[in-house]
Image 1 (cartoon, rainbow, N blue to C red):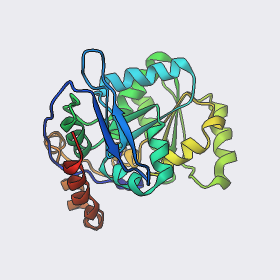
Image 2 (image 1 turned 90 degrees about the vertical axis):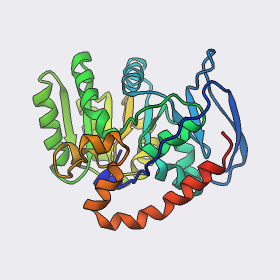
Image 3 (image 1 turned 60 degrees about the horizontal axis):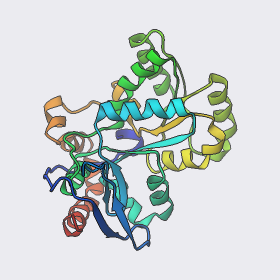
Image 4 (image 1 turned 60 degrees about the vertical axis):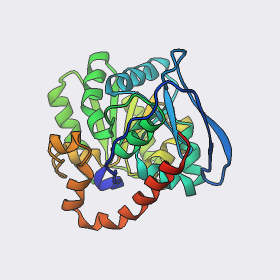
Length: 284
């Protein structure tokens, strides 16, 4: 997930936890207080973590793409969320957002802060799976399988620009775009375009939590197999927003690069120390 649209910020850090334990913990998400089990395979390897009550799936990019591919084959509308530390903290106060995240078909670990917290619980994660990194291999998969892709959101012209770039890289890709927005007054036009294209995979760049809430609200009317919230990823992939060098991304320092480019983000940083403290105080 990321930039312009959502402007989420991920803290750095990394820490391994004990692998292979089934877990149960108390959570306090949006006023809820109940035991939430972390799921594991029969081998004992965790398939998901519960970070302050918010589910995060323990998977890498390849597995995420395979899951999305299966969702399209199944044909039942599924939300894919790209969860970072700010998602988790917002969910502590926003009951509806917490519900939507925990009912999603897939919650990807987008941000080093989430990877760190999941690893403390035993998740075998060594990388983030961000919306911006997902889009290009996802487009290639759609082209290979003949799945129809729709890009929705961002500033006027941005989604169309990205659609053209993806089409150039994947000549057989069936992709279209619309700027749109989460305002219910725009729903009729947006749904019409989605349906006319025969969309199977929908990428929504409204920023969080608007994009996740929008997909959930219209889940039964979208007619798509997969709706993925990608924040400001369109801006990154069209060059409107520069990305951190690869070495910074690998080191979990992309947040620092973005902060240097956008000093106003400092106001968002106040939630991150609280996130770290809450995670450290929560049971593994």
